[in-house]
Image (cartoon, rainbow, N blue to C red; front, side, top):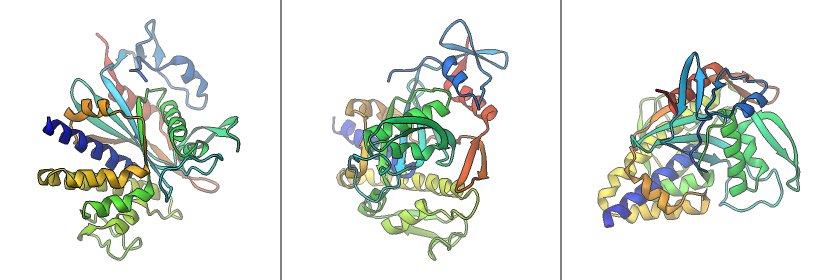
Length: 330
């Protein structure tokens, strides 16, 4: 029984870590044709067949993989603990967006990274929370139109689901970026090797050097972005992924030393986290692989009037969705 509890705590940490950097309903049975028609600018090529659980793609028949469960992880640019915002627009933006896809039969995981600059359908709400319109904007801004807690997560979940042709998102976990430093310091830092010259971010980030990031350096490493450079968010996403792997390695090694570090990790991060995950669900997830395949929503970055704008390659995304979420029908 003690081992099961330890495993559950490890999983909680893993989910929290992903939210830090990335920062996360019932099983869906197919891409809904009507909503896909409403996305007029995207015009997906899949065709619904006589069964709602089947689609036809490039002449082949596919069915949604009912063994999948999805978790959305959001890293929010707020330098404070989670608090409910009564006025729309003060909730921050989700600078890190990752969808974790779990195969309940194979016990495998896939991480799908989504650029915060992705141009998508965003629901606009007034100061009193009244719906105004749906506009094309950076998907990260959808979080701001909620309450900084559950409502923001729910709106972001809807936006990501719509972007991915209504793929279901069962659960979410978000973490305010203010939690990065205390969490990293709590576990004694994270060791990484600097892959490129990032001394412009901090003099310590010399290419090829191996250093232990404390809380302050960790926050710089995964949050910094030169907005004057087109596509700088792509480099930041790469650093975030690197940090995920290093932090998970640190946590796993520390498992043999007992539960104290795990408990401290969760204690340090909990004030900054919003999630609808239940303990029962966490226990069920304890048998999954924690060495996921990492994919990125395909597309290209363009210079917008004020900010970078990432435009999805719809054809490539459709192919990716088929490969991740569907299996060829018998």
